[in-house]
Image (spheres, rainbow, N blue to C red):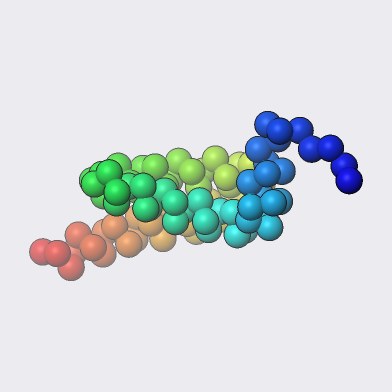
Length: 86
């Protein structure tokens, strides 16, 4: 059995907890949304937090198309929710 460094967070969160980077990103977005709901944050702050997470993960994984698609989806969803509420 190999020794794993205790503070190698990528190994522990991505490999052990989630299994793959894609599943980790999905779980992290769910955790961000759940924490925002628990602390009753405004939608604009939640959108900014998710956008920053997606930008950081997009540059980390090197998939800039991922960043563009997720950010456009978030902005479009926010705009549609504003239009439906009126």
